[in-house]
Image 1 (spheres, rainbow, N blue to C red):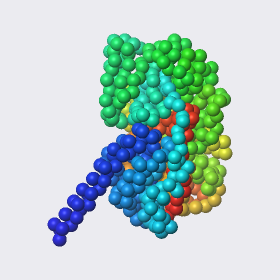
Image 2: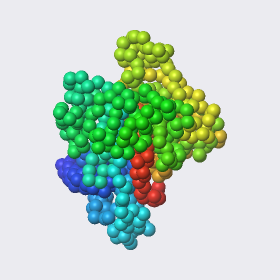
Image 3: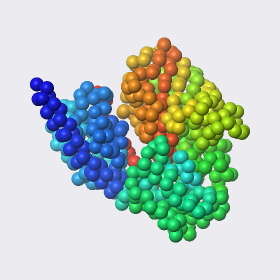
Image 4: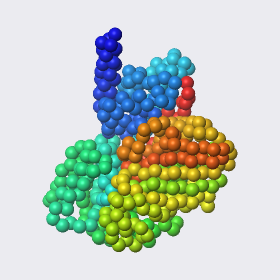
Length: 487
C-alpha cells in the first residue's frame, strides 16, 4: 500500500512538473512578443520557475472550494498563445477555474469561452510607441527599477531603459555599478546576463543597451546626444522633491516628464497606484510615486474605509533600516538616526499617516503615525489601529479583505496571507505593495488592528513601475473583468 501511494505521489508530481515546464516558454513568449502578463489568482508568472508555477496553482485551493490542476489551466494557456490579443494582464487561474467549475460555461469550447471573456482585447492592434526611460540615481530603488525594466526586454517592449545618470566616473566605477546590478544581498542575483562596454560607458543587460552618464546635476546632461528623445526621467536620488528642483530635469534636452520616487512637496501629485491613479493627466510633467509606506497602507485603508468607514486611527510602522541611517554611531541631523542601525531599534517619525490624505483625501486629519526602525535590511510591517464606523468581527473583516485582494480593482495592490508561520524574510520580492496578515488581525466591535507587511524596496518599485507605465500611456486592462469569487 505504501509503495502504491509513493508511486501515485511520484507520478502526480512528475505530471505537474511537466505541465509547468511546458508553460514556461509560452509565458515568456506571450510577454516578450505581445506584452501579455499571465498570473494565477494575482500571483505573477513572468519569469517564474516550474516550482513557482506549481505553487501558484496550489494556492488556489486556499481561496476556492476546489484546487486548480495544471492540466486544467494548460489547455487555456495554449489557446491564449494562438489568439491575436492586445497587451493586457490576464489571470489564467481565474479563467481556468471558472471554466472548469462554473456550470454556465460547460457547453462552451475553450476558444469560445476565452473569446467572450477577453473580447475587449481580441484582434485589437497595439499602436503605442516605445517610451525612453532614464534612471537618475542608481541606489536601492534605482537598481530594482532597472531589473524590472530589463525583465520586460522583448520585441513588444514599450518601456526602454536607455540611460542611467550617476555621480562619479572614477576608474572602476562602471564595473562596480554593473556588479551592484548583477548581485544583490537582499534580492539575489540578476536574472540574466550583464556585460559592460568600457569604451562607450555602457551596460548591456539581456539585450538592453544602457548608457551610463556621469553628471553632478541635470544641467550637465544633454540626452539627445545619446539618441534619447522625449524621455521620462525617474529621479531616485531624493535630492529634489519640489517643482523647482525636479523642474531642472525638464531643462535637459531629450526630457519630457519626471517621476520622483519619494514623497513630493508643494503641489506635486503624490500617486499611490490603484488609489488615485485617475488623477494622472497627460499634461502632468512632474509626479511623485509617494513613499513605500504610503503605498503599503493607503490601499488597505481605502478598502476598509469604503466598507466600514474609518473614524480615526494610528499607524505604527516597524521599518527596516535604510541608507539614511549610520552603520555605527555617528553624527546625524535627525534625532536618534545617528545611532547604529544594525544594533538598535530606533524610534523615529514618519509622514506616511498624513501623506495618506494626499492620495485619499477622505482620511485627512483622521490618522496619526510613528515608526520604529529595526535591524533588518528589508521588508517592513505596518500596524493599523483603527476605530471603525460600524462593528464587525475578525472573520468578516478578513473575508472582505481577501475578496478585495482577489477580485477588486485593488487586486494588484493588496495581497492576503492566511499563513500562521509567515515572517518578514518570506515577503522579500513580493510585488504587491501590501500583504494583509490575516492571522494577526484583531477585531473588537468597532476597534480593529491589522498587520500589513510590505517589501519596502521591491513592492514599492513595482508601484513606481505602474505610475511610470501610466505616464507613458501604457494602461493595460486586467482580465477577466468579473467572474464569480465563489463557485
